Length: 197
Image 1 (cartoon, helix red, strand yellow):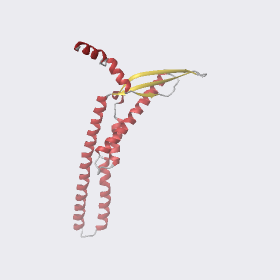
Image 2 (cartoon, rainbow, N blue to C red):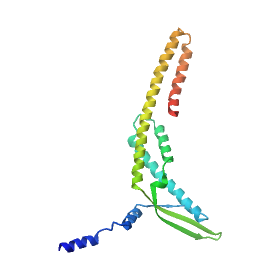
Image 3 (cartoon, helix red, strand yellow):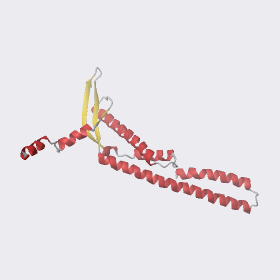
Image 4 (cartoon, rainbow, N blue to C red):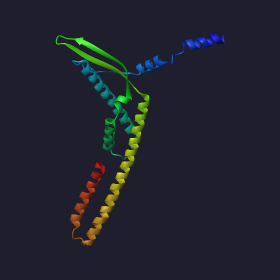
């Protein structure tokens, strides 16, 4: 009886070989269709461009969610937006997805043939986890850098105020108006310089 039960379990089990892995990748694959072009090479290039756009839009959404979770309330939104845009530009798209399948379609028209390529792509889970980790680290590093810059600006304002007060005292109030104008201008320039550096 036990032998029959074990034989039945083995016969009904899901195969663990490459066929099962390929089926799992196909189940999670996304179809991306390129534009109709006049040559097969242009059709493939169009489909690959669409894959690039698709992956970047998916990662842009993920990055927005990560920023919403990890950005502290005091950090300016434009600072994180710039960091995310730089990170998205550096994404290695070709290593993040694998091509599961490809379909080339040829259509005959009066003016000639047109070609269209459809690619099925699946994300590599290890690449997804690695890039999410890289994004979290970049956001943490950006938080530390922004805090240091804000502290530097505050220290700069204090030093500027002390310097201008000392110069005003040396001049016995003769240049008070000019020193205040210089102080306001320099104080406004410090945050801009800290952001650009």
